[in-house]
Image (cartoon, rainbow, N blue to C red; front, side):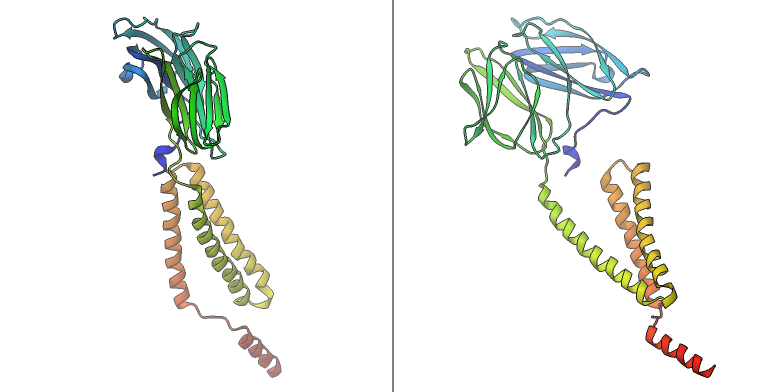
Length: 316
C-alpha cells in the first residue's frame, strides 16, 4: 500500500532522467544511448521517465540523443549531449516558445516533510505570460509566476484553480499530501491553452492518523510489560541483589535496541516491512520461551524467606 508511493531517489552510481514535452499536438521520438531504453516517444503534453541509469566509475553518464519529429508541420528539434551526474535526478523540458528551447534542470522528487505538496509549472508560453495558482474556495492567490519560472514550490494541500493570462485552464486541481506535481502548459490551436497535471512522485496513500492506534497499543504494551518486569525483578530478588537484578532487567532493553540497530544498519532486507515482520517473529519466539520458563518457575516468597532466616538465627 505504501511502497508504491515512495519517491525513487537515485543513489551513488546511478542517475535519473525525465523528459517533459510542452508541445501540444506534436509527436517526437527520442533516440538515445540509454541501452534497453534507447528509444521513446512523446505525444503532445507528455513525459518519459528512464528509471535508474548506471553511471560510469567517475560518477557521470554522458547522454547522447537525437530528436525526430513525427508530426508534419511541427518544429524540428536538435539533439545533443548532456552530462548526468550520479545521485541526481535530471529533467529536460521542451519549450519552443522560449529563447532556450531545451531547458535542463536538477529535479527534486522527495516528498514534503510537512505533509504538503510540491508543484512545478512547466509552461511552453511567452516568458512574460503570468501563471496564477488560486486556492479554492477562498480565492487567495498561492502563486503568481511568469512562464519562464520553473522552480519547485511547496503548497498546502487542497483544491486549486490555475489561470493563464486571466483565462482559467484548470479548475478543481486537488493537491494531496506528499505529492510532487508538474503542470505542463502549452498553446492550443484555437489560440487558447491546454494543460496536463503530472505526478512526479505519487501522494501519500495513507493518513498519518493511522499512527494513533499503533502508538496507543505500543504504549499499553510498554506499560504492562516494563512496569510488571521491574516489579517482578524487585520482588523476586533477595534484599542484597534488588538493585542488581533491576539493572539486569533494564539491560535487556539495551540488548533489544542493539538488535534493532544491527538489523537496520546491516540492511538485510530491501523492504522495511520485512524488518518489522522479523522483529514480530523474534518477539513471538521470546514469548514462547517466557511461557515455558513461567510454567516451571517457582515464585520467591520474601516473607517466608525472611521468617526462615529468623528461625535459623534463633537456632544458632
